[in-house]
Amino acid sequence: CSVLGVALGWLQPAIGVAVKPLGDVFVALVRMMIAPIVFCTVVHGVASMNDMRRAGRTALKALIYFEAVTTVALVLALVAVNLWGPGRGMAINPASLDANAVSQYVAQAKHQTVVEYLLAIIPDSFFGAFTAGSVLQVLLVAVLSALALIRLGEAGRPILDAVGAAAELFFRIIGLIMWLAPIGAFGALAFTVGKFGAASLASLGALIAEFYVVCAVFTVVILGGIATAFGINFLKLIGYLKDEIVVVAATTSTETVLPRLIQKLKALGCEESVVGLVVPLGYSFNLDGTCLYLATVTVFLAQATGIELSLAEQISLLLVMLLTSKGAAGVAGAAFIVLAATLASTGAAPVSAVALVLGVHRILAEALTFVNLIGNTLATLVIARWEGALDRQLLDRGLSSTPKPVT
Image (cartoon, rainbow, N blue to C red; front, side):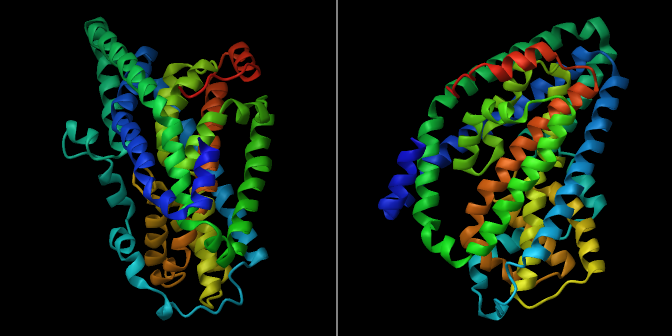
């Protein structure tokens, strides 16, 4: 179906654009299930751990790992875009760009302080967390619920069993939805190729080439190096995720495979408690690909509009992006919105300049979401190994076997 989608978009662009709803329906169905699955997985996993200290220790280790790896991603992207200079010589006048084309994204972009960011994690109500579309809000409610169940002891056992049963129900529903994955991939790929295909590649080829090279280097050298250091076969891990990679490439959203990723990581021998904490946290704090995107495109736009950023300005930019990248979870077109927010808060380039990359954003998003997926999968395995919560025999057996299809 993926090949057919690409072929349709290439040969019949108009029809390719018209079948976009097929991909949208699949994405909407999966997103509908994310909040209940995250809630049940986190509550059941953490409460089953029956140790608040261990839960806190696992979360702290995960956050330290996330910050270290995303900082490396930002530094690598900044160094690469300065050396390659894909935007130099373009001499684009921001006034000549169509600001109306990106007005909806600019309107959603705003500079967010640390306090505002932390307050946004708290939902308006307990049930409001399930409708806000924020993984962090669901995670907060789930962790509080799990800690309360631990405090209840045996009295909370019936509730814990009910949550576990509900999790099984929701995963069965996801299993039914995943039957639509090939159709969703067909519609999403047909739309991408039909709307943004050859013309976009030709006009901003240097940026696309540079970004894909940076993503490849980060994946092979940094993530591959981490995997080797922890005794994980990186190539087999990528092969194990082949179905999820196809879905992510088609939909340019890692959310579409979050439930399936949780199942696969548990099948590789990661304890449910670690998977339940680290995966949702990673979807908000470990966006390696998004960091590569923000650093690359921000400096590219500065170069394209004739602005040379000093070393001090780029260090300041790095610190700002460490915060703004954390707001790129759970929102459609989030990376593009966060890019506009980064420009608005730093002044590295005119905000209207984001119109320059609007046509190729989806092409760039295919690479950044791939890195996000691999980065979060590896992070969970690393934290599980670090915590002594990884069954090596199951891991080796799982990576050596042929993974089941998404259906």
